[in-house]
Length: 255
Image (cartoon, rainbow, N blue to C red; front, top):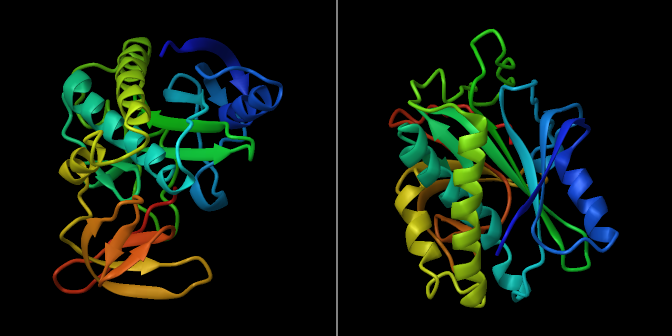
């Protein structure tokens, strides 16, 4: 697949722009990349700050002809691609906190949000902090992981254009392989790749589910639909808190 990049200086939300384009009939492959967002969105209705030039703020339009039960793998696919790209291009050790928060040095460096139109189109948004300084970082949320950037983590390359090009090339390849496999996470190799970069697997966690219920236990794997398995139960959505050995909760993510 070939991506078509549309660059804008400022917008409210690149995901909103892509969703609007999808509803207007735009074909798959559109990328909207913004210098800054004024109304960026994160998971669970949270906000995402994106100062000018401080990172990559972009969304891609996809129309995967995939069984609905397998669509949950799409944001995880993006997370795997992002983690590998940050490792290889920026030279920074990176891992994922389920489902797709990018962790660098135990801090949050990126987040991913997938939104559907209901007509088969999906806006896949990625916010990656690349050049943000300490002064530019947003304050950590009351119960969230502190933010960081690739530059603060000692990245060897913080060129936004080069990072975007590399990331889109890898995303195109991974997405095509997954789509050709009918979204099958085993046949495409996606499940194995995800387990290889997910720092949550093997840890004791606290899962805060929508509605406030909680589950505590060992996160053992990710099932065939991309759901995290905690204490034998599959979790499709929620905040995951990594627990320390002394059972004190690490802060949870804000996206």
